[in-house]
Image (cartoon, rainbow, N blue to C red; front, side, top):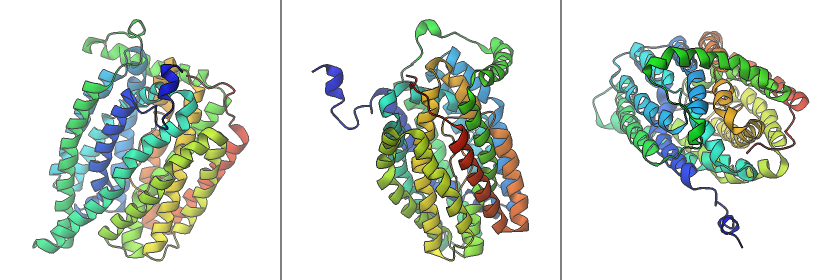
Length: 440
């Protein structure tokens, strides 16, 4: 028996090297940011914002994110992944200082713009993940990489709820001021955690691009890199086959509507349904626990049934759940909706990640991921979580439109989003095919 076969005897033999380091870092990020992000919209409101400002702040962040994404993907393929990931993480963490010290919602807008602007290393990190996972276990691998940080993310919103309750019960602050104080402290924790994550990434990640394949760049090459990065967008689009192009179109459409509704799940739950902030945290705990239990089986389904079939299960289920959310009449109605969406994500994300990785060769992944992402469609009940250069403009517009639509009628947000996602599911069924041979 060879050493390689011996390694494969364990169920999680692929969790080593880069995959292990990336998972540890995601655990740390998930713990710190998930304490605070479920309450970010409430933070905006209690610093003087309204539903329109919630939409504006999320829109600004998305617009900022798109600016350097092509540069991140280009450098990932030409100069390597690891240093780009590590040093960019340092600056990304520092941008969180605006959230910690924000006296009003305008500071949050600046912080959101800067932090998302500095997330251009994500295509490199996604490429590193795909490079480090063997094709035969990508479905299970991506599922595990989601599940382990997800296990930590489960308790974090509850911790945020406890923190808010503590300040409400043990200080002379008003309810709104207590939420602000608790969230401010949680942002401070996230800020320090980000610096630790940056160190771990620089210290322990190893490069997947061969030395003779990489190039060196300095600040004097900035204009050249920007020019070549944006030129590579059109070249990458021309390289795509029909299935990849259809996926991009679906991602763009879904990004608009997911960004439109994402920030308002918590607002609807607290203002319309009447739940408290701690109750929202408890619901995140319930949905997270259920999703965690099913994460690995869902990833195994992707490897066994195929990525497309797995994607379709989630894509046809999610619109029904989102439409019914407008009728959630209490704690358990909201909990059921979020749990259903969490399960849809648990099968869609590894499905899309596997399908896209199998379609794109290693030397193109950084550039392709920079324009289309690697997660496909993901339903968020908070902030919109990135994607690619082509995904950001519709998401930015959707976040702004969401604030306007919600001000007209909260129910319209869920009705419009559910219809759009159902149409997207039909397009995947009809026009997306899996490759005959997976790329390594």
